[in-house]
Image 1 (cartoon, rainbow, N blue to C red):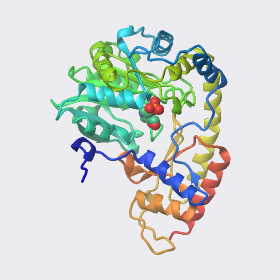
Image 2 (cartoon, helix red, strand yellow):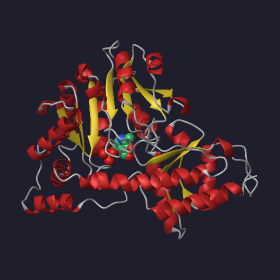
Image 3 (cartoon, protein in one colour):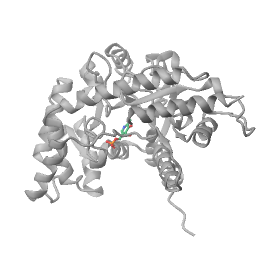
Image 4 (cartoon, rainbow, N blue to C red):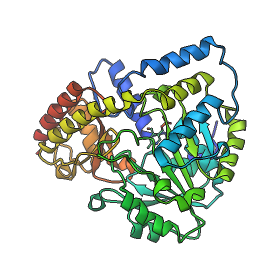
Length: 400
Ligand code: PLP
């Protein structure tokens, strides 16, 4: 019988993709599910972006592009990077792929040898550890609890670094917690990084536009420009412009790392879709009002979710500074018993109970490397959030 390669046996499918599939299955069976698992904006892609894609199709921009993208997208990316970080990158320092996800995968594939360690603060985006494992590396998980706002401290970073450390992955704003590193926090981490010149840093900034703070979200590279030749800044258009299906992500960083990624990309997919590239160029260089308008809508939903969930006995959460997730502590329900007589031993039991008893789908904290929590996405309409809170409250009241 067929046995997959060891790199496949080492990893699991993405839990968030699996959760979305489970919700689709239940809906197909006729169940009404209140779905708070979805990690993508519920808005439609703005009209001017769609129009740019249509224009590209009509102009015959339907062929392979260079591995590093069309000139229009390259200059849109370079312009966005300069506006955001104040740093002018060269064309040889940027790369792109089919979503930030593919770019991160390629970055790890391009740099990891067997046994190289990648420092991943937990809770983490579900894909990082498995991407490291798929590429022969060793994930080194550093738990970061509520006492530090679920953020990596300089002391914890220092304690995690070994001679095998190749990368630190820093995700700000964070999926799943929404935590944002302040300039001071980034500067403090940079102080440690300066002492370990062999260590590269991948900053995943895919949520940097979903920002509820007064100040713009800082990037490590602008706080510590001296580290520029060790930082790979990853971003994309999926979250900020409601473009998850278009699959365009990009990265900026050290030319040798970028060249290695491009070499792999030349053998993997040649380039992402030319039509999507035209759309992404319009997104990055065009009118930005969609971004601020959608953030205000997210803010209202976030506040509704946080107030509602904090009113449920046994649950607690705080308002995230960025991204569209609420990270909920559910320690108050662990050990309780369901009406059917089963004990809720951990956050996975609790999320299964919510699906069963309340028809609410959320993702358990253990999928992100920290228990007992669950993540809800508020990239969904207010009605859905309100009915989820009512249903969760009812289900929790039924516990004894
Ligand atoms: N990074 C984080 C933290 C994410 O949550 C996601 C999407 O869920 C991605 C990267 C990938 O985004 P995309 O591949 O759509 O650009």
